[in-house]
Image (tube, rainbow, N blue to C red; front, top):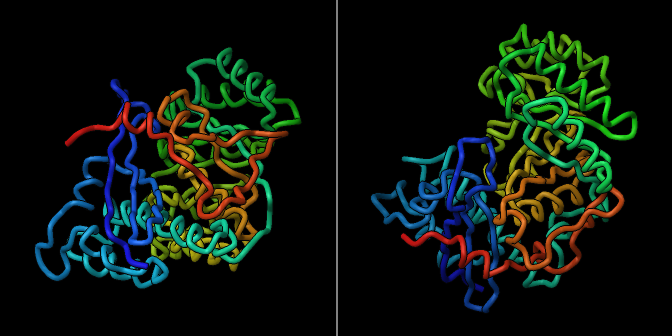
Length: 372
C-alpha cells in the first residue's frame, strides 16, 4: 500500500469570536492510498497556517511541505513517516504548526492502518483497558454564578458525572474565581467531579492561594493555572498543594513532555493528539507518564475526529481515567460526524469499527469549507 495524496481542508464558521473556543474553525487532514483506503485526522492550529505546511513546495533538503514528505510511503511505516516528517521540516518546524499538522497526518495514518487490517485503532496501539470512557463535559466558564448553576444542572441531567469549566472570566480576580467555583460545587453536590481551567492567567502566589481554597471544595484538578513555560512555578505549585495540578495541552512532542514530567512533577499531563505529534507520539507520552505514576488525560476541545483518537488512546493505556468532551454549540463540532458520539450513563463507548471508527459528514464539510 502507498499513500497517494494528502489534503488539508479548512472549515470556518461565518463569525468567529476571540473566545478560547477551538470549535469555531478546523483543519481536517485527508490521506488517500492506492488501495482506496482513506484516513482522516484533525489539527488544532491556525487552519490556514496548517494548510500551508501541507501544501508548501520543497525549498531544500530540510524544508519540505508535508505532502511531499508523505506521498509514496507505506502507511504501515508510520514510525519512519513520523521521523521523516520531523527531519524534512527541521529548518522551519520541530514544534508549533508543523508538529500540529504532523499530528493530523499521523492520526489519519492510524485510521488507514486500522481500516486495512479490520481492527479499531486501540487494538493496534496494544490495549483494551476499557470499552467505554468516562466523559467530562468541557465548557467555557459562564460570566456569573447563576449561569454556572444552570450549566451544572443541565449537564448533570444529561448524565455527566464530571464537568470542567475553563477560561471565560477566570484568571483575573481570584476572589471572583473562587465564588464561581463555589457555585459550581454547590450545584454539583457530591455526585459530580468539577475541574477548573484557568487558561494560564495566574502568577504563582495567586495559583497557590486558589489551589488552597479548591482543596476544601474537593475539586478534581486545577488546570493551566500558570503559563506553559513556567516550569519552576508549576513545580512550586505542585509542592504547595494536595490538589491535582494539570497541564500540557500546549506542548508538542515527547521531548517537551519528558521535560514537563521530570521538571514540574505535575499530577496530570494533557497531550492533545491534534498538536502533540499524533497517536504515535501520544502513546509514547502516555507510557512516560505511566512510568512516573501520573495520569495522562488527552486534551480534546475540537470535534468528534479528535474525540475518536482520544478514546482510542484512553482504551490503550492504563493511566487515562477520563475523556474530555466539548459541549460547545458549534455546528462544526456537533455535525462533523455522520454518527456523533453519544453519552450513556456518563460514559462514551470506545469505537469497535476499523480505524478510528468514524464517518465524516460531507454536508458539513461542504457547508463550512473555505476555498483557497
